[in-house]
Structure formats: C-alpha cells, structure tokens
Length: 280
Figure 1 (tube, rainbow, N blue to C red):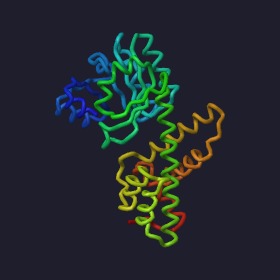
Figure 2: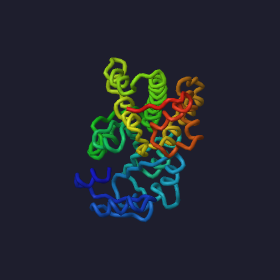
Figure 3: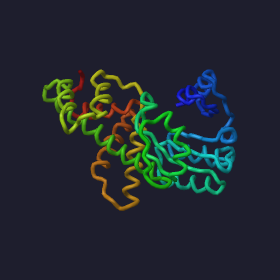
C-alpha cells in the first residue's frame, strides 16, 4: 500500500511497531512518525490496517493515538477486519472532533494491492472525497451503508472463505484417501460451473499441492475472522451452522500448533484424520 501511494505522488507518513517495515517506507521516500498521534497530525487522510479489535482501539484511542492527533475535516479510513461495534465506537469519537470516517476492509491479499475490492461503510460524500486515495489500492469500491457496514460485509466474506477452505481441504483429502490424484480433481472442479474462479481452488489449494505452508495469511487470522462471524450470529440470535463447523476445524488446527502457518495448513488436520497426504 505504501509503495503505491508513494508512486502516485502522495506525501506519506507512517508508523508501525515493525521497525523494518517503517525503514523500508522511509527508504522509498516516506517519513516516519514516532506514534499514531504524530501520523494524524501530519496527514489529511489516515489509513489503518491492523490485526484485531484490541490493536485498532489502542491505535485510535490511546493518549498518543490517532483521535488525539486528529482535527476537523480530516478523514480516517479503517481497513482492518474487525467488529462493527469497534468501528462504530471509534467513528462516533472521531465525529465528535469533526473527523470523517470510512471503514473499508480489504477483499484480496497483499499481492493484489491495486486490484482490491473494498466494501465501504460511511457517508457517500466522505467516500467521494476519499475516492482518489482508495483508487490507488482498489479497482472496485462499494458503498454498503453507514459506519460499520463495511466491516460486517468483510466478516460475511471471510465466513464464506473459511467454510470454503475447510470444505475444499475435506474433499481433496477424501480424493487422496481414495487413491485419486488431487491435482486432477482440483483441475476438474476448478473448471466446473459451481467452482469457477474460486480463489480457494486456484491459489490456496495450489500451495497445498506444492506442500507450501509459508505464512502469507496466518491460520490464526482466519480463525479470528470466523470467530467474529460467530459473534455476529450470536448477537442477532442466528444459527451459523457451517461457519461454526469451520471455526471448530480451525480451532483444532490452532491447538495442533498450526496457527502461524499459512491458512491452507488447515488441510493437515484432515490428512492426520485420514492418514493420507494431498500432494500434486
């Protein structure tokens, strides 16, 4: 994201607890801040992309946080995967200082930056004011509703992704157990009407066939996203049958120490149960 903003000619100030990441941006032409408050003091648009609700709240609401450094007419754009409650809480506090708010979580991983889809929560006029910024990282931008609606949409999307990941792992392990080449099965299903353009079959499962579990998106994070989905369902008293089953599968994988592996490592629990290995 930082690289794309710099290449587009934006002045960029960054803060992160990962010092190496900050240094890389500075070398590319950005400026380092000492804390989130200093970022807010230096920018018209402030973007956050963070691991979870607790970190997001800390970055925005700490005494050295973004809200403390914010000012009237500024825009905060929150791009993490978090609950709508956290989003709306911070949006309300920002609004009290005259700061505009958008939640615009990301559909698509880092390699697709520039081609992302963004479901957006916030006011239409704030989105239009921010469009030139968001278009540096996204091709498709959808206004879903008010603050928090973007985050709800992202959680719904990730429930689908988690369920799909678990189900693909399950059926591909079944094929391997029955002596069928998983590569052939993957190619056939990926070209069927029911699974056309499935990222799980085309990208994530390709890593599995190559036995590549190098972390790109931690399994822990998919568990976190499914847990957010379960919490949403509990909040509105709706059963979440498939989402809950996928959550349990990822919880078993975490219990086996796979949380810091890539998300496709979920297949390892099915391989253990079936005594079969999925390999291309």
